Image 1 (cartoon, rainbow, N blue to C red):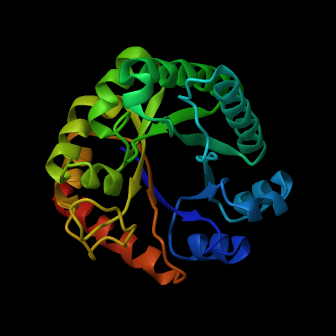
Image 2 (cartoon, one colour):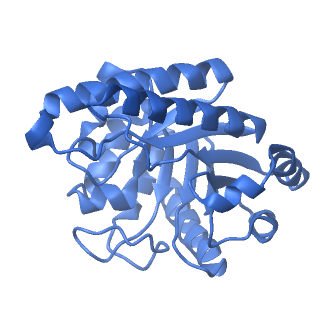
Length: 262
């Protein structure tokens, strides 16, 4: 069983400092947030060399302010084209997984939830096919929107061949506590390729805190992973300028995994 841990590199984490910290503190990979403008200054060769030299793998969070479920065909097509281009960039950076959001910004009352969900799954199938041809795992992340949250993973798996990224904070904010998330891993772990680990103190908000600073039941999540032999990548997706918060979060999850194995 291989449960690999990393953390998100985005506008709050300088790239060079981030990969150095990851290597020095026992992380297995870094996840690149490709939504943020500063990543346009990073060339793929630099990313690949910097991570390879430090023994780090790469996961990519593809751009997420895109409307893949829009009722407007040209908007959907443009969103998918942008995601496909981002997949190609992720491949050049050496990424093994590309995480993306499958949702829309339009109102279900105006356009019909079933029609919008059909659009979402059509786009997911397209992006997943492109990723598969490129040699990357496409992982659809649950978000805080009515069209697609963690409770919709079974439908995603039935309608597409894409894998999933389980975001713990998003799931908790939509009413799926740690026990519910553990149940998803036990039942559908073979389709959950990636996990975003983050804490929250609020019942309806995701605060992206380090583990140990909120109320999510990560012990149940860790037990489900260990007891089912789950294998995949886990990103500590934390909103903080302090890199040490990533290391402390990892230490807590390491402890929970060790307890589950005992």
